[in-house]
Image 1 (cartoon, one colour):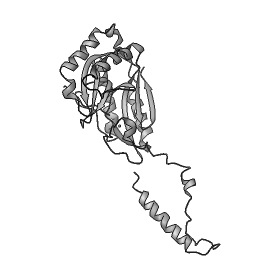
Image 2 (cartoon, one colour; image 1 turned 180 degrees about the horizontal axis):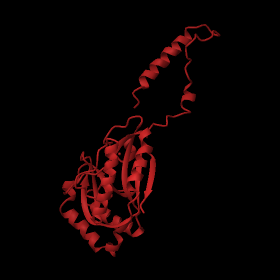
Image 3 (cartoon, rainbow, N blue to C red; image 1 turned 90 degrees about the vertical axis):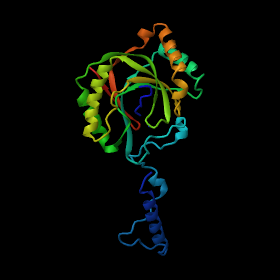
Image 4 (tube, rainbow, N blue to C red; image 1 turned 180 degrees about the vertical axis):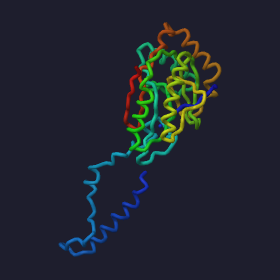
Amino acid sequence: MSAAPLVGYSSSGSEDEAEAGSRVRLGAEGRSRGQSPLPGQRLPVPDSVLHMFPGTEDGPVDDSAKHGGRVRTFPHERGNWATHVYVPYEAREEFLDLLDALLCHAQTYVPRLVRMEAFHLSLSQSVVLRHHWILPFVQALKDRVASFQRFCFTADQVKIYTNQEKTRTFVGLEVTSGHAHFLDLVAEVDRVMEEFDLSTFYQDPSFHISLAWCVGDARLQMEGPCLQELQGIVDEFEDSEMLLRAYAEQIRCKSGNKFFSMPLK
């Protein structure tokens, strides 16, 4: 598969609250100064007080300008938290040197490519959880993966990916050993997804570490000579065989701005 899909990135009551506030203020202005409020009638709460207590269920405000032009695959709604399960990858200095060499060459084909800020291998799609389901979801994950042991894997095959909507393109390193261990983890994560009526992971997934990304579908520019040249850089990089071998030591769940770690045995 030449371009496997990746995972995954307003309050309806606002107008009603504004209208209710207008009605209360009109009623207050209709009484003479010094007159007590009518029974059952509420005075408006000052904005300065309202802003002291932001809702705990509010997720981050979406602003694509702050994310390099990326657009959410689903709209942000109050109380909904984008959630993703993955294995984190801790990049060593030598890995970053390899990444710099790959990115420099890839940018000769697609100049808008930018480096990833953090690295991981996805075990789930990006799904939406209601705020009150986050902790039960994480606990279910912990129970499912509690017996799993850490394992070694290698990711050394350059591959080009897009998200499902073809709005973003990624350069990644595909896992070439340890694939079966990742499938076992995904099977347990999928069971948790099914318990919460959420989408399971892709069929025949390509486990990988995303290295760089850009907005839009850049497969035409990157597949072919560019891909072959990038693979050559990896193959010829000093000690690349050892460099691209790593251990999966924990599973992590990111929900909104919250992170939960589950160490493997």
